[in-house]
Image (tube, rainbow, N blue to C red; front, side):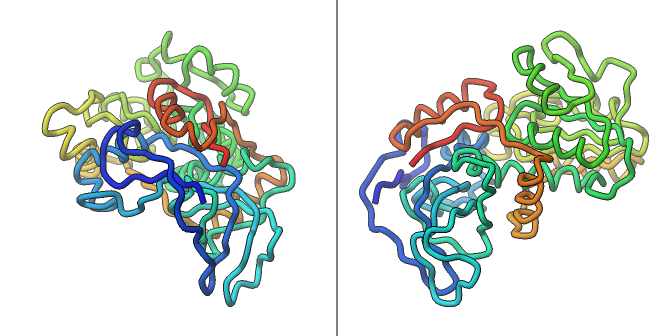
Length: 337
């Protein structure tokens, strides 16, 4: 089968190669999926380089732990291993697993759900990881189904992969949603349901008088002091993933960039929370079958919909990653296999 292989850390153009490799087989409890679509992720640009170095504790110290990159998937069941009861060959599925930049992948049964019939493979592949992150980020801020309506939520990076889902979910949970986006994406964020959209190229949301119960920050280019100013006294800031910025909103340089990245931002946030009524909390998403079920139900009901910016073939992965790094693409970038 065809697969993208990465055997060392470095710039994607230097370390990613398309190879023919052995097709996997489904072991007990696994499902062999013929992948139709996967995605590139917003943090691929630094994780493929092994930066910052502390991230290698999770991805592999000397080389990537998985030789085949990729996490999201949508495709068709090719075969099932012993003990699999929920799927049969020919079923259309979506979910997550390591090694999805390939034609086939063997996936634990609980990593999959039936693909919503109202989505294409490309749309379905764009859901799992970013939608997990949006759902768990809102939940960490006390916003979920059944929560008190009318909470005021600010979503920074509202047009990105996580942000487009966060806007829709927050509205579905009864929040009053303000999104922050660039000029070209203001209309999109409004169409997704935001009650108000701030164009960050024209207005500074940290300088106005509005205060929020929850801020979901996917960008990290504002200092913690500025973000706290925009929070209500008992509000919650959720910092999503590992941004390119440090505690003061600047890009880490030198040894800080190589070794720590934005860990200082998280540490400072934790210490500040101990002496403040505000809660400043980092978030790294957790893969969850229960959350995948919840997402499928929301997709099928029309409460949320994926936003796909553009697609590339598997042989164009490096071009897709370059575009991801250089642009502020709305939604997700999809790889068809």
